[in-house]
Structure formats: structure tokens, C-alpha cells
Image (cartoon, rainbow, N blue to C red; front, side, top):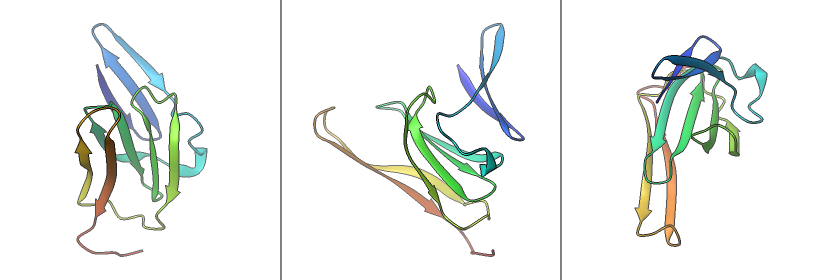
Length: 104
């Protein structure tokens, strides 16, 4: 399965099908998703929109953990997960956003 963004819509593509996906409780005004990063160990996802919103939740988009307005509309040069994953009980993760320059 592949999750792709086209304008203001997300699509889940797999063998022979393409279905629209809507992140749980993601604000409609967030605009198009321009960056994504998946945490492969837990299948969580971070989405960054053209209007500067960061949405974090499950990769099936059914559970939102948080949404944050960064107030920065530039595309980040990097959107990455970092942390330790010793087990599902002992896990901590953070999301790093980096920009070459902040022009608003």
C-alpha cells in the first residue's frame, strides 16, 4: 500500500484500487499535504500541510494523536521521527522539522 497526496486529498493505492483517505479530525483548512514521514516500527505518520499544520496519528489515519499549527508555511527541508524503540512498552519518539530558512 502507498499513501499519496494530490492537492488537498490523500489516496491509499494498492493492487487494483485507489481510495480517498481523510485523516481523523484533520482541519479542512490545513490545505494540501506536502510532506509525510512514517514511523515504521509503530506505523504512525506525521503529515505537514502547505498551511503549516503538523498532523500526527496512526498510519491508517483513523486516530489523531495531535495537530499543531507551526505558523510556518515554507516546505521543511526535513520531517523525521527520532527516538528509542526498545519495545512497545519502552518507546519514546519525537518529530523533527527542519527548515533551511524561515520565510513567512
